[in-house]
Image (cartoon, rainbow, N blue to C red; front, top):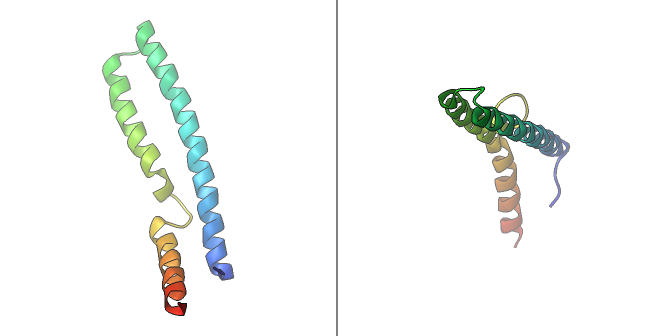
Length: 90
């Protein structure tokens, strides 16, 4: 499969966005573990940790769709067009 320069730029942007998401998720896990430790130590109220954890998980899952860079739909369009091109050649 050959990609145009525009498509390669979209793919590169997606790779960068995924790397950022992985870094954020790793940091989030560390922060959550610290929060759980503080909760067991009695420093932080458990209810607040639960609410923050649910929000953090939602944000971490949805992170690749937020901010600048290509969205999932753009990448899907590229793959669909390539798949259709490949299918029509056979």
